[in-house]
Length: 393
Image (cartoon, rainbow, N blue to C red; front, top):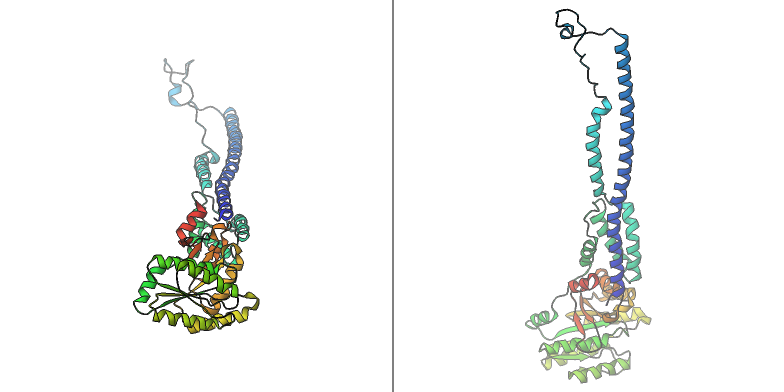
């Protein structure tokens, strides 16, 4: 699951870390080479100046009469004798360049170590991020989501010292902000049943997205938690959809409410709720059509169904492997009927993973479940921490 995205992110974070280490080393090498040359030049200059000063002093001494200190004039006989004491030699004064040499050395030392703290510029960030941007887009992450990730990383990294930066952790934190954990659906249903019954869930999405199978999986989950369920075959646009839901109802041993092909879907939902009230059914699961070739008609139909049945929960079903198509579809349904959450089918065969990252951010709604197989048990409750661990493990 999400293998391609995981590999791309791992490669990028490794390259970033290498860049963070290499940049200071390059600066240090360059600085060291330069400082050695400067030091050599300063020594040569100082030597030349020192030699010049000494030469001038010698010439000055030779051309002027020697002054012998009073102690040097004294001899054993009290007068000028053959032997005199050695003339005191004056030590040469330090040149201005020499007096500055010590502070310069200290400055050089400070400058050398400061190169370990190279800051990431905006230009360098753009260069480094471009590779991650391409990887995310290729793995079905929506463009608006990539821009959000870029903004988060830019705020966290630009102008900061590269040394010690854990870019993988920063990226993980950015992705975590995009994802939303769902409420516990079982607890939510039980709380609602204290006030009214039945609890109504309406499933919407495009044909072929695994909507009917997802409904059956949710029905199985509810039964396991001691809740009574009935199904409503609201996809009256396709006769095959009614038959498919009937087969699931038979296997799960739950009642199903249906009408003839072409009947009003809202009427099917209404009849199922009436049946549930009479028979003390806890939860009604309503299937709906998903024909995108007449998108405007479909959305009007969804609006009518939700207006008549007043569902407590509206769940969009999308195929994880369709990437940006699923994100676009979820956004369209959300704008039309204000969905409450998402189920992503076929997540187990999704090598890219961009849909799971994108769909929550685009709709601002949580993913409730991931479909991870064809069996009734193959419905995994979504948890963003688990998802991120799969990507960054």
